[in-house]
Length: 317
Image 1 (spheres, rainbow, N blue to C red):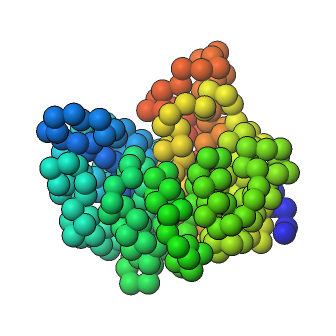
Image 2 (image 1 turned 90 degrees about the horizontal axis):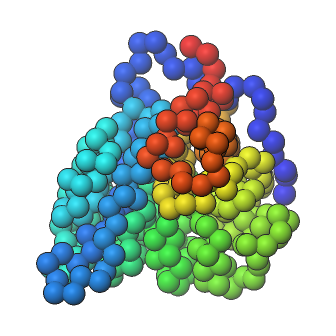
């Protein structure tokens, strides 16, 4: 396993002065949960913010277009939070479950129109989620989409699938927090400590990346990124990032750089993922310095620090 260091030289392409929104890549997002709309005891969580925050992160990291597929009852609310995005409605049953055919149709359309897909934020644990995620893992075989970022509840759904390691193909990035990483370890029959020492966390990340044949981002203090051959640990970050929604912002940033770097010979998917993680951590530091605070970060506002940090990795125009 080689230890990787981000070089100080710019790695991202210069943004051409005549570029337009079609120049800088499109990110598709599929996530969110409608809860149990109209039910007498609506105890199923309704998750609107997650896909919107992914869109905000993707936009802040520089992609040209963002498209969101989300349950129809919450679509307008999601787009109100992320007005830079366009939306595709997914039909749901009376108890809020995704209608499988609708979800597949939306996923297929997003794949045909996007360079990278982020799937899972705010999805919940519905019956049709696992099959939809498995379909997403195969998108690169026959669509425009060149990478898939598997986040949050999409990871949890995969943990319940037998033979998981045989299901992953192509450019896939999984972004587990320690709890999700533990579920992956259990599903694969491995032991490890995702919340342990930096060395223990690096071993877990490398083990998962090698077993799954994909890039793994083990989030937390000293976030670790591994593709099974190279391993990198982030040296930046701040406790202000320990709040709901910052992981959604990161997933959007990872998808954004994946979409922008499709044809960049200087930056493969592993390197672009490291850049996203590093810029996310540094943005947290900048917010804390600017605000003089250690907590209370609003992920929506946090996004305004990201373009400057991403710019540190960009060739000048």
